[in-house]
Length: 104
Image (cartoon, rainbow, N blue to C red; front, side, top):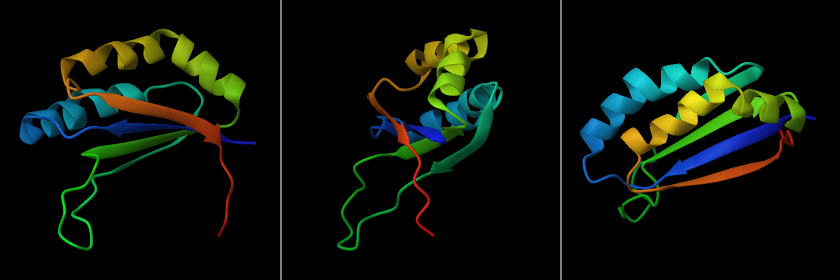
C-alpha cells in the first residue's frame, strides 16, 4: 500500500522569497528523492468567506511503501531536502505520514 508524506507550511513573513526558494531550490531537491512515485504541491487560496488560508503551501510526496519512504528520507537526498527547510521555512512546518486510500 502506498504511503504519503504531507508537509504543511505555515504562512511565511515573506511569501515571495519563500515561493522563490521553494520553486527554485527545495522542490528540485525533493524531486530527486529515490523511490518517489508522485510529488504534488498546492498553494491554498482564501476560504469561502475570504479568510486567509491556514497554510501557505501543502506538499504531498507519495511512495510505494513505508519502507521505501524511510529509505528515501534516510538517504543523502532526504537529508539534503530536510536540511534545506531551515533556509526558507522559518514560520514552521507540520509533517504528516499515512497510508494512501484511493476514494475515486
